[in-house]
Image (cartoon, rainbow over all chains, first blue to last red; front, top):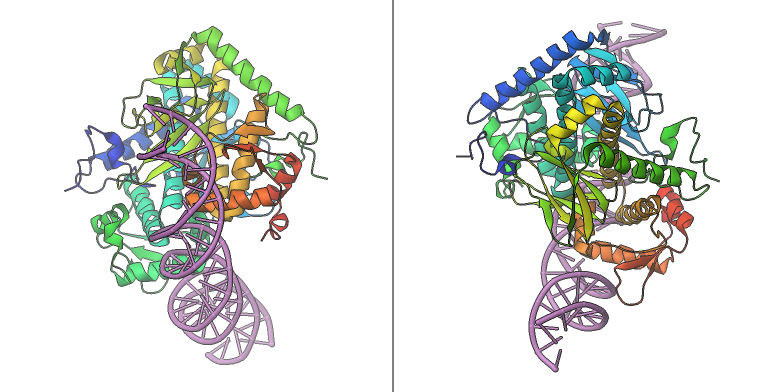
Length: 260
Length: 260
DNA sequence: CGCCAAATTGACTGGTATCAAGCTACGTGG
DNA sequence: CCACGTAGCTTGATACCAGTCAATTTGGCG
């Protein structure tokens, strides 16, 4: 009984914090559309720009803060985290990246990267020169549209996570995070009902503005409430038996009230 | 004894959360450079695109969430706040905009705005059609560069505020906010040592993930510590007698320790 | 003047952080 | 094989920062 997820009178109604691209529920359409968009984008970039492909392994960095910027990256597979470091030594996970996402946009304005991009597992990265992209954009309007949309989407996502972190209590933040991650997987045609969080509790907490202990406690509580389940062995593998239930928990203040 | 603010070996060192464009201290260069960039950008847009100009007054909205997107806006003068609303009714200030800033980028990917843009005082807004911009970008490489840089800068700023909110205690968040606001004014050639916050305590708190009472208390504490001063009458007018001291407070964990 | 929104300040509460102990899984080297 | 160390995780006890509630003051404005 949610509002339908396409054809909205007031589109902002569906914008759950951190959760926009999801919509696995009522109809799979939006989800499949997103997947198609990602595939199309990759194909376009591949044909127009012939990017350099590269395999990187978990823990490897494709760029680091301070490094001179002159190329952008697109993820063809795998997962990345972006880590930013402030002058006084605070470290923070400022973003997560999945297949089809770009890496490096935020470096354009400064001419140097502002964070480290670290692979969370084996990944295939496509790399292209920024000047080549600019030139190609001038020649291929469709490419420019794709690039703008990608940047725009990134802004929207950042805004959603800001909102989640500013306005939600710990329970809801963690639930929102899981919902977001599962949605990102679903859109990309991967299993969303059972997957490995590729982050430690400490990293999740850092991303959400919480401590690792709080994340651990919340996960235990969510498991007790059967909104999630742990894989026996490796509590980093999560099952989401009832995705709509999790979505409801994320979206309703009230649904979170009872959960001692 | 800070690192010089231009000519960096490792540029990320100067990136204080929310605070990048500042650098009023050691030499005015960076500050003036920024100002020049903004002026140049406005000029370029004016000559290439001849945007429609319009004056809006405090409280007026230039777009609202859900509205169909087909034009972008640039602020020639005045101040705006961006307000986003989640599906369950949480409201949040997700951004502030000053002269030279763009409004509407984040709507590109969805085709509709995701937040309300509300003027905080009388402002001059330039408006241009997005399709016209796309076309002009294809013809004028310099314009495309400017647009990409603007989007990139916005991402960087969002990231900085995420970091500030996630990792800083209330005192530091408010101080960072003041520092950021003063920096934004300085860059634009406006008085940065004495200015009016155009937001209520509630709005500041909302932006920073705090309550209005906490903001009020922190401001009182900062005033007691003489890092800021209130204008007699209208405590919304703030003086910053010693900007470097405020900057030091923002940047040093330790500087904040003593301040009962 | 009287009304109202904004802001301040105090007292109290509660949600997270902090500190600490113990557990599990895993790899390494004796 | 087991002893050991380590990293990640869980759970409990306690502390503290910021939220909540409430009373009061201030300033703006019809």
